[in-house]
Length: 603
Image (cartoon, rainbow, N blue to C red; front, side, top):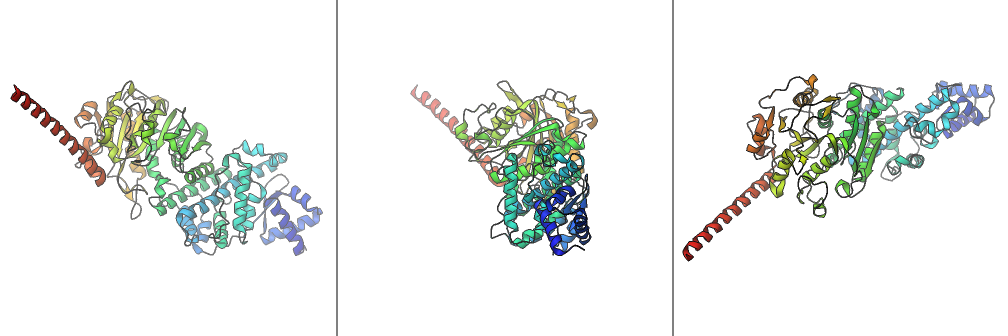
């Protein structure tokens, strides 16, 4: 019968090897005889301290002591298995219970701080699980490759050193020094993986973080995707990460909206422009939700995850880190740039021509430094006003489109009708084209209010096409849409998911996207017809008659006009600008009359 000293030595040796090892390697480390080794191993298996794993020659792993005090947390772990997904961020099943349990553990910590604690640990478990799965595969099929980092890199798996592996942290979850151990693990991973340098959170040892809470959070997260195959585990962890991002955005309110675009809105945008294959770009990519939904779209329609190449830029360093982790959890290889100057003043992807652009830029930014960019090559449709970046974003995006590229952009409703500072002329140029640059506005969608965490006002979606004469969708040529724009009024769609926020249902998304696809001439979408109150294909004469205002309510026959969509400050500023212009015109006429009268008197 093995004594306690032998069992302690076995566990210590296994811990030093990262918490999981093949029998041959562990046997060699312990230098025991076969009979002693097997006796100790079998005793620890019977006690539930270690578990047996598959592999050539067999392998063993430490089993973490999962002791979660909160009853909700225990239920969440038990239910942590793939559940149905509606893709919209509502109650998906176990993710909601898991978040409630995790949120309970944060105590009085602010969601904005706790977000990085929880998401960092989910990311750490993901890369550790992926590493262990690949390592077990190598031990079974090619043992010599188990310590060859190139074998992991070839499968897009991060190298995780022994002290950073989840099994090691889980076994030490109840130790007072667990915060420092997590920090050390993050540093070690960054040291061994150049593309993660500067990405991972490394502030777990700070006094404000309770070690008991960290231990319980590790235990909770340990149950995510437990026992799943590699591909399924990645999907489950990715869904959990994405769900947590959305819930933290909701908890942070306006600040949360800076890094997260609601999934149902992103789904509309992605399913409208259909990024099947090619380069996808987001110049203000936040936490990367546009890319995640694009990859999902490709996979759901029979494509491969590598069929699209992902490019992005983000000016907020903390958000950039969230994006890098979000994409890594999903297994998405991406070129995401960061600099504090932003896409206008330091365009990191200057030469990129993207097939698809998806963006939710910050609304109505007045201090974007437009005065320093008056002669920029991107302003083919006119110089954007220095006091509002909306049309700078639109032109930056058009500049980065390939000859047949398409884009979906979220903008404030004022962009559809404002005439301040030359915005009316800019909008006309984008519609009709100017100086050889083609008209690019393809479709406008008015959204209901309360879809976003950051604002309760309604916003709109602009869909742009660099070549409206045809273009390509699913390898099929589209019809010539020059001289026409599709308007969709979706303000009456959506349903409340809580007291303050709406979401689109699958049916809503299908209704919006099918109208656009049919209008573009995609055969499987059916024949397009105008639907009073919902959609209308308008020609340039109609647009001209409405002063090139792009508010769908003007065209689809809705009873209320665009002013109802505008918040009071925007509406007041627009009305004031019109009134000032009328005063100026009136004064000019008065002066002309005085001049004529003086000439008559002098004669």
